[in-house]
Image (cartoon, rainbow, N blue to C red; front, side):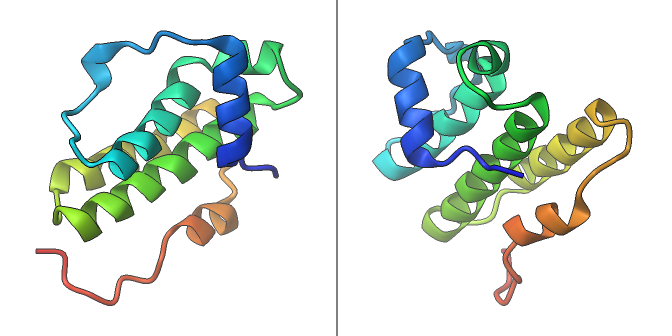
Length: 122
């Protein structure tokens, strides 16, 4: 399973020149947070275009969405603090993967994205 990494997302973004729906943006003044969230939104909103213009499959795009959302979530928690709504969104993404893959979730891969929580999320 290939996860679409930063360099390839940036290449696809330049190639496709998407206009992302601003309704999904949350106000992020921190540049790194904003960039990681944009990777997630791009994968979420432009999946069909990505498949048409690359060799990535729907499954790879789904797992990449989750990967980048987890990166965003973890960065957000470390920089701003815990937010239960963001945790809830991660759960909804797993449900989306499960639904779209008809329950055939690669739980080993999902677990690789989740760091061991050693600190309190307050």
